Length: 165
Image (cartoon, rainbow, N blue to C red):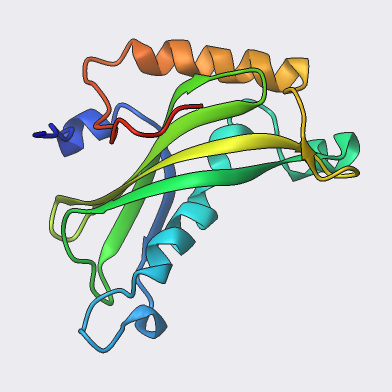
């Protein structure tokens, strides 16, 4: 199946989640960024999408809930190398009562190319029981607003077709 990836200009319709230069310690023996650091970029910028709707670290602490990733589908599109400037963007695709589905985009600003996509499923977790729990109303409402806003974009996310919330 041929996936159609968004153009960089289309990704810029989303807010920037992270902007940074790739540090030297991320280089592997192949002379490019080691695979583990693509997930580090996701971790560094991924929480920002929730902060945009008012759900920050303090909110999670007060309510004793958090978000745990359940699945990832990582697609490498172009190399990242030490010193490359990268930016990241996140798009929320859908949700159920306890999980949401999204896609994270890593752009190599130095080369002007889409470096990687990371499709994910994240679950709401009660930190006391360590079990999934329904989203609190304010988080559910914020996710619904993002989903509606992101569905209105003029392009389709290149999902793998196997991840379902």
